[in-house]
Image 1 (cartoon, one colour):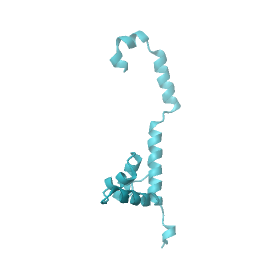
Image 2 (tube, rainbow, N blue to C red):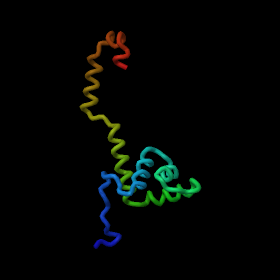
Image 3 (cartoon, rainbow, N blue to C red):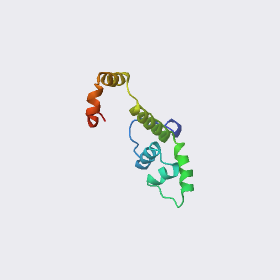
Image 4 (tube, rainbow, N blue to C red):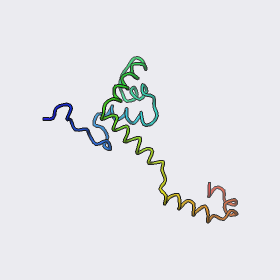
Length: 109
């Protein structure tokens, strides 16, 4: 049996089994404040200050930190365009007939 220090850290690409932890991670990646991310994950607190303190404790958990880092990376990658996509768009722009664009503004946005 593994002792606590040797526990296997789950794959960060998989949703966390603990649904509150997973929701907390999703909230943090969406830009929610620490306290609100904690409360919106289903944890109960009387004040936001205590929620922020408890959220800070969660952020020190390796499993949660890894999941947040993974989700942030995926979010950043979703905004990146590949060189092929940029080249394709540039070719479309280059080949546009300016008169056609001006006559059909709704078509070309």
